[in-house]
Image (tube, rainbow, N blue to C red; front, side, top):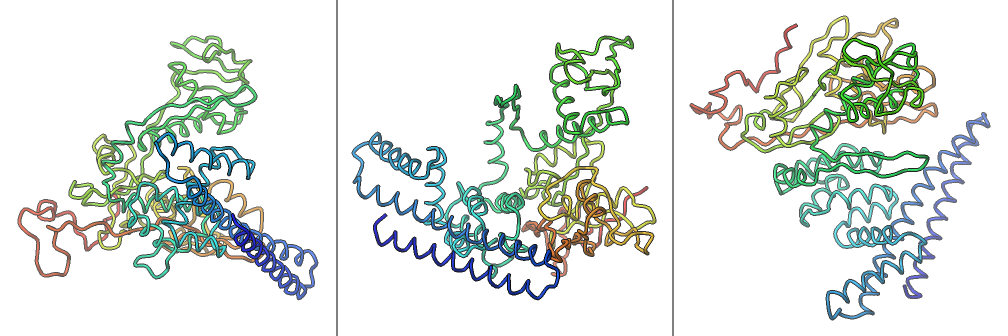
Length: 512
């Protein structure tokens, strides 16, 4: 970087720090209007955190710009490579230089250079938002990651969907208002829906990469992970959770996470399911008591874990949203598997035809992508209402929480004792952690609607909206006439063959 660039860098830093000083001064002046000194300190601290986050984003943009400038300058100084080996050597030299300058690994430096190149050449809206401090470096990296292997038009469309408010059908809310994990989920969902290559083709390539990985960790522990098709992975997780919960009880000392791990380990190492808790129960084989051993390790060595035959293994509960024409094989639109995201329609059809025990058919409206009603109002919370809450919220409605647990606790926003009703608009489904937060702190949920989950008000009085799935109208096959066009239904068409698909009416409530 030349002297002029260094001066520009210093000036940019000075501006950022000056802006931070202004924010802190304004926060101090505003807090001076409050008589409570603790509230003044709290408000100033929150203002400082927000200003620092904005400054960090601007510094990250400056860092990416500097990395891209250095890479371009180094390439120009080195001149054209005479062979592929020379080209590789030049790239390695650039990576090593950046790694040394930043005191990071070469892997991290290589990733930074790749991200900087993408931001400065293909993602102008992302770079501008980062420079303005309206998104974080994590958001920018996710944008880079989710546009990998997209053509320029596809990358620009994905970027515009989340960062250009004037684009057609923009995302709900600004990207910087979502925590990075939720933003990645939304960006990946949009990418899967609009990818120029069919999700079926990409899924077939991905299946070839399925694998199990083992990574040793400290303290005699290790990580075991599996890269699997989404329906298999989601089913394994849900079945493991159900089996682990069935083992909980007053005499069980293990946590739910420990029970999950013990259950999976016992399934893989023996023919049994992780059984009794820490109350001294023994393993059972053919109705006869045996010493409690799992994989050759005694119960005393494993903190009381034993293996027990006969513990039920309920099938995974599957909630999947499928565009009706995709379910009929007329389009290739992805379905949405609860707790995961977009999956190929062939996988969705297989889940239907294989007869999952608790599969719920939930058709979506072809006009606006919203799920059709599946439940009815009643005094007590019905199973259909619980499923509707899962469809409406997609997860725990607390901002930033990604808990998709099947047993999130239904909660009356306005307590029944205070006149609240047991209707969808007065219900939330927070996870246990945030349900407890609601009843033990000043965090308060806001009102909800049939299609909108509740937001939250923090103890400081700030309002945080809950994010939820962005419904999108599915593709309408060319041979299916639109309602109201006066063209009628062609003989032999899908609506003629399947007259029960009345698209102008809501799905009738399920039979009890």
